[in-house]
Amino acid sequence: MKAYDALKVRLLEVDDLNRAAAVLQWDQATYMPPGGAPARGRQTATLSRLAHEQFTAAETGRLLDATAKETESLPFDSDEASLVRVTRRYWDLAVRRPSSLVAEFQAHEAESYQAWTVARPANDFASVRPLLEKTLELSRRTAECYPGYDHIADPLIDFSDYGMKAASVRKLFAELRSRLVPMVRAITSRPVADGSCLLQHAPAAEQLAFGLDVIRCFGYDFERGRQDLTHHPFQTTFSSGDVRITTRVREDDITDALFSTLHESGHALYEQGVDPRFEGTPLAHGTSAGVHESQSRLWENLVGRSRGFWEHFYPRLQESFPAQLKGIALDTFYRAVNRVERSLIRVDADEVTYNLHVMLRFDLELDLLEGKLAVKDLARVWRERVEADLGRPVPDDRNGVLQDVHWFAGRIGGVFQGYTLGNILSAQFYDAALRANPGIPGDICRGEFAPLHGWLKENIYRHGAKFTAPELVKRVTGSDLTIEPYLDYLWGKYQPLYGLREEERQPAGVA
Image (cartoon, rainbow, N blue to C red; front, side, top):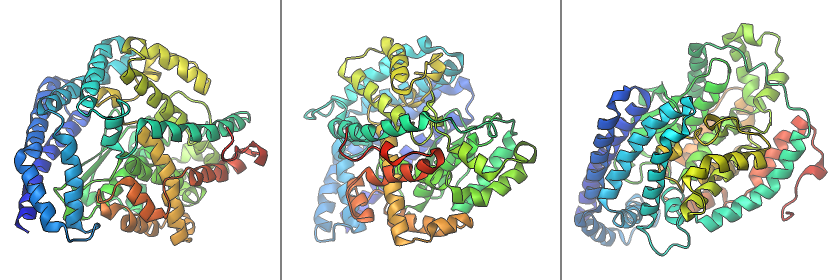
């Protein structure tokens, strides 16, 4: 298949450019001195422009046409047919966006991110407001490259969660919200679990060492990865042999770095598990933001906040922090890491209230894109919505509109819905894993994670982007995306923790 081989060579060159840009972005978020920001924006813009031009060139389209003929008799799920199908979808999207806009957005992201790293600790929204207004303009211009959608956010959502639309996300969120809010009310009507055992001084080195030991047990391969510190944790992939994670450390919270590490390791396990034959092609990454997030949330929450996990690891944690945890019973600690309370910070939010944070951001994004909300009013509206939705006054912008890096290092629109989709899918995938291997909870109690990791790798990770998220969910779980396993998981966990009554559970179909 001459055209197929030529297409792969071309795609590898595009991938090399994109991965080189990713290295520069990782460096900016970890080690780069502040003085490097102006040049870094230019450098990443150049690489992104060159990659986009190479990918969208007429020759790529010609090779796709020729390769489609070469592979037309192959099965739908063959590697070759999948590569052509997925690349064609990405190419159709990319050719409609000018390379100049791609480069302009990339340069702006570098400038905006660097400004945010200064503005957030200084509580200075005014300094980044003009940059956020530019981000909104660029996001709208990007969306306008794709006429014919029902909503301006639809193409932006498509980039991250192909097949989802603003209307379908709104409908899903409304259904989930109607079931979550009564649970939040019921839990928060009870006394909040005591979390004071976590809020003690814990040296950074010991926190980081413990987290690394845990993810090594999960199966994260340190011969193909590493962890570094950053302002807002993330995972990045440079190749199948170089999948990195970052974390943050607060020395006044024993588990802050740990759960960040578990979260990012979930992303990394996915990337490390992709079939290495896909290297350098559009198949060599996770299939959607929602599916990717399902893996980070699965390892962070369904595993890392489970009773069985802590039955195994709590004695080790006590050994690492003997002065802080001496005399603290496992039950007390387990309730602390699963306490539910209305909070200000999304990344610190518990499992029950977390999605309310995501829904707020999704709604604000739609209002910004539709022109119903101006950036100059965003901080005020943010405070109003948080107080209305979560019952907490927002004391400053550091804990409000400045808390998430996403709008200051990316686009406005099409990103936040992936977090709630991931929560939903984490439970749906885990439920499928338990049906296939009912012994997984017992394995976790013994610190044995290979059975779960192996099932996920075989059923999800190795496929990379071969299948769309809806196709993958149906193949893996036997059904379409559904919120029921997620709600069952939350109720099964928090009902005994907070002594909830069955009549406090909102049934399906009741608003």
